[in-house]
Every structure is written in C-alpha cells, then in structure tokens.
Image (tube, rainbow, N blue to C red):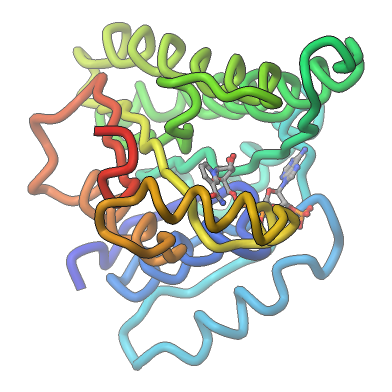
Length: 249
Ligand code: NAP
C-alpha cells in the first residue's frame, strides 16, 4: 500500500482508462476523488473500489465539466475543502469528434480542444496554488500517441494531445522547484468505449501495427500512472511515456 495517506483526483473516472487509474491508485491505498459529467456517473467505479481488499483507499464521486472554468474551480474547492491537499492529479477526461479535415467543423475542433487541452489547463490551474504551497505532488496528463504522430481523421484530437505535451513540459519547468513532477502518458490503442466505435476493419489494421499483438487494457495505463505517482518516479518530470505495445516505436 505505497499510497496510504495520499489523495488523488482522476478526471473522467466513470469508465475505461479513468476507472482503471482510479482503481489502481485506490488499490495502493490512495483516497481517490473520481469525476464524471453526470450525477451517478462514477457509481460503478466507486463499487469497484469498495470491493477492493481491506486497507485500500476510499473513493468519492464528484460531478465536473473540466472545460468549464466555474466547474473546474468548484471541483478543486470540493476536494480541498474535504481533504486540505491533493497529492496526485490525473487529467484523464477526454473526447473525440473524428472527421477528415475538409469536413471538420470549427465546433468539432473547439469541443475536443476545449475538453482535452483547455480542460487539463483549467484543472491544473485550479489545483496549482495549493500543490505549490504543499511543496510536492504529481500531475499526470493522459495524452495519446497521435499527439506525437498525428492521425488522419483526428486533426482536432491530435492537436489537443500534442498541446498537452507542451503544456506539461512548461508546467514541469515552472513547478519543479516546488517538488511537483508533471508528465504525460501517451496510450496507443486501448480497449474502451472510445475505441469500441471503430469498425472491425480499422481494428484489424491497427492490430497488425502492434508488435505485442494485442490491444492495450485500461489497466496497462493504470499501472503506468501508479508508477509515475510512486517514489520510484521521483526523478522523472517533463516526460511523455508511451504505452502502446510498441506500435509507434
Ligand atoms: P471513455 O471511455 O470515452 O471515457 C471518457 C471519460 O471522460 C468519461 O469518464 C467521461 O465522463 C469523461 N469526460 C468526457 N468529457 C468530459 C468533460 N467535459 N469533463 C469531465 N469529464 C469528461 O475514454 P477512454 O478511452 O477511457 O479515454 C480516457 C483518456 O485516454 C482520454 O483522455 C483519451 O483521449 C485517452 N486515450 C484513450 C485511448 C484509447 O485507445 N481508448 C488512446 C489514447 C488516449 P462521463 O461519465 O461524463 O461520460
């Protein structure tokens, strides 16, 4: 239980990767705040954490739209009022609105950048002062391999995830002196609701490109986040850790 006594926030923890991250951190003893945009959205995540062995961390559900300033600030207030400090901030909430560039609307661009990049900016901003004052903490932002490679049909999403890398490196430099590390995890293809909408042909083509010959599981990302939050990762900051079965090496 390496995270006993630590508090974590995982945005977008109602399902998929966010839920796996929340469960993994709780399994290691952290008290975890889980968000969804919907009341009751994190019920299954809370049930999964309640079913963990004795000594695991507790979980709380909060409703937040990370792309909204008022909502992000209210989220930070709710966590800090209850706990006084936040040790691990995991910005996982994300959306896609795929389409070829010539057909992509400005609204589709704004929506994806607004949640994935602006949302991460706003939540980091809402917690930064308190984490700096505590002189310690970990921020882990969930990017994507397409933020490194680009992807046809995902100009908005790839731009948002590439932007996360620049944001994270800048925060890593600004907050290193306060003992806060800031890193990105760039998942490849992970089996979740987000990727379940892809056609069988697209999935087959992707599988051919993965040397480890399987799609990633949400736990593969949960384990990487736990590592970056652990004492073992104390000297790692400003980095992008690719977790993709070798797809983009
Ligand atoms: P998912 O199953 O679609 O879950 C997305 C989560 O984000 C949900 O919990 C959702 O909450 C939340 N969310 C969406 N918009 C939000 C907003 N405005 N404010 C707060 N929360 C919001 O996605 P996933 O596959 O687990 O992906 C999680 C993260 O990993 C995303 O950042 C995604 O870009 C990234 N990623 C995924 C893959 C993959 O292959 N799956 C690959 C690379 C990167 P609600 O309960 O409100 O719906």
